[in-house]
Image (cartoon, rainbow, N blue to C red):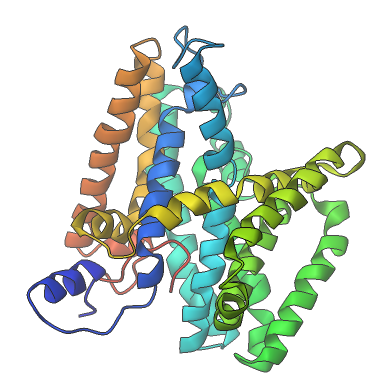
Length: 370
């Protein structure tokens, strides 16, 4: 049986010695990211203008100091959140490649890791819940149309778009490593492919929702992959200038945002993510590198929480849209979060973890990791 990171942690604190498990260097980062995602989803009825549900309540009064603070936090923390997830997935991709660069092995792994959860959660969790509560975008549509717009175009896929797009990224950027192995030649080929896709896919970027998300986000996946492959060289070169890196990212992002009126929308989105990136990175820098039981628990179950948490919120949005906003946030974040966590643990205990991407039933369900 493959031990989990929690078991490694407990072994260490009983005085045992252990080797670091793959991905331990990003454990706290995963935990913080998934909690930010859950918080964003929990408050989306107040913060997303085009959201399908409406409320007469406001999280904070417009124009007040808390409103300004919330707006700033939403911009600098939530804007680059998914970009960071893709960068983390690209970073973790190296662990998969170290085991095998065989393309068909890769597709098989990612089928079980990503597509099986996509189908299970989409068909047996998200779709039934949204139909049961009468989600406005699902109401009156035939099932075949819903299935097509969830799994093919993705415009009704909700939070599951991330899983589908991530599979596309693994499928595309695994090709150079199949051809050249885990070598610098493959890294150069991968970067060349990434640059070519900017031009090749541009006419098709708005063909479907999933294609648009792929086009907007894949460069962050590539950046995470490149950083891991060249980490020692990058860190050595930036050791004395790491603060200038964040400032440089912000300046480049600010220039691109300023010029974005004359540029495609995708450039604006990428630039905004780049502009805001130093702020959450500073937050992660402040987090202790040593994990504790809470961070290990959340990071260990990040994929389960991501897959199962969001659909539960539609009960609150449907039946209690006008309750006190802070009560809504507490119910959604803590209450629905606890239900999602317990359900994920129950599926693993029943040896059904494969439905959430845990093919060996005991693997750590970390987003983007083998």
